[in-house]
Image (cartoon, rainbow, N blue to C red; front, side, top):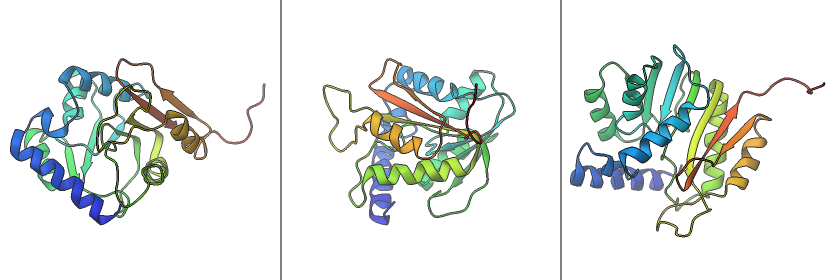
Length: 208
C-alpha cells in the first residue's frame, strides 16, 4: 500500500475513534448482528481448536472475543497498521497477542489460518485496489499453512457506499485461482458482501 493511502486510512479511523471510542461505529462495520455473521463465515473456512490464527486488520480484536464465546480455543494473533486500535485491543484482551504490523513491508511468521474482515473496503487513491488485493492474497497464502479467508463488499448491490470499493466476486475469484486451485467464494450469507477462501494447493493432477 502506498504510504499516503496508509496514513489516510489510519487518520480516518483515528477520527472515528475520537468520536465513538471503543465502539463498533469506529470500525464502520455495521451492527453487532452483522459482524457476528461475518465472524461465523470466516470461521467457516475450517478453524479448529488449537490452530494458530492471524486476524489481519484486527481493529479492536473482537474476533478473539467471538472465538472465546464460541468455545474455540485457538492460538490467536492480531495485526493492524493503526497503533491506537492495537493499544485498545491489548488492553481489552490481555490473553491474546496484538502487534502493530504491515504485512506488505514487514516479515511475519506462518500461521495455520489467516483471516480478515472489513479491512479492505476503502477505495485506494494511489494504487489499484485489485492489484493491492492480489498482493495481499499472495502474501497471506505464502504465510498460511492451511488457508486464508477474507471478506469484501460486493458489487452485487443496488447502492454503493461513497469512498468504498465494491469488488467483483468473479474478478477476485480469478485472481485467487491464479494462486491456488482450491478456492471457495461464499456469497450466500444475508449481507451485501462475500468471502473468499484460499486453501493450500494440492500437488499434481487429480485423477479418478
